[in-house]
Image (cartoon, rainbow, N blue to C red; front, side):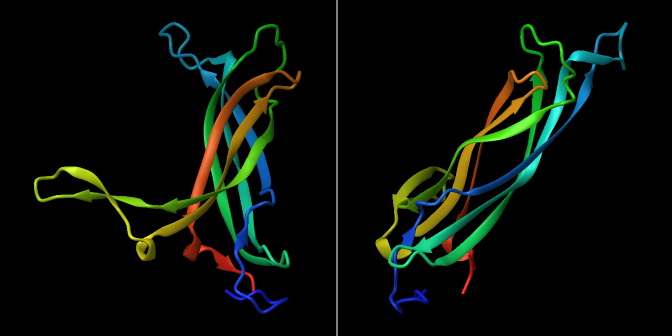
Length: 166
């Protein structure tokens, strides 16, 4: 890909931060004991974090945006009431923490022989694939501001699968 500003073949820069847009929804969990089966448990809720994370690769020479991709986030989390918390566990908020763009070059691939044994084989430079992605921590807090739960999320895509912006 050629940089539109300087007409060079630039290296991709991953120094910018991903654009994160997350939402959380929750419902109280059911009690599973025989005598209270079907009742709601006020100390436990099931939360679903949904949203998107967009990453952009820019040119190192001019800073122009060259490639982009958007990842869908769908994480299910069990939220347990924190000590001293009195608020409703269905009134939750979500924050993204330390989300970064990742960059990985595949130098080894698994190989299965005729007997079914799997070994890792080195890949020559021309056969290597580059992957870009995003990752970070999703922090879910209850209405009183106490951290209810933290979950790690990450995803990646092969560089050739990203959308060109030019």
